[in-house]
Image (cartoon, rainbow, N blue to C red; front, top):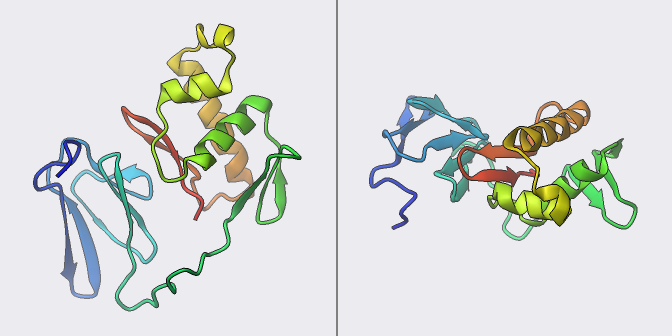
Length: 171
């Protein structure tokens, strides 16, 4: 029972050996790996499923071995706040001060949506924040994604939750 989730939001069904996720015409959308699905999508082991901007699930194929409870997988992206450095799989990623601030904010709220307003308050000073447009915010996010993709093109760390903000996924 949540106002962001439609009464019949999504459905997973098995067809042969495949699992199919269907969006049932929900208002706030169903997402797989950060991309909104329009009708249906075939699920792969490890896919991230998001219901509206609030609930996130991980799909594990029944033929796969589930991870052991309490055992954390190593994170791919690491932030060293003291050194103000970021690395992915041991490869250092160079970021501007604004990009580093944005990534730090999102990482501290991993898996949760951070609003554009929260980003503006955190990344820019009070005087600078007055003139920040959606285009400037989108440009900052785009450049951060590009830098991270250079080190790890197979994963999107910063995801846009349309109409709500951004979220960080480090798995």
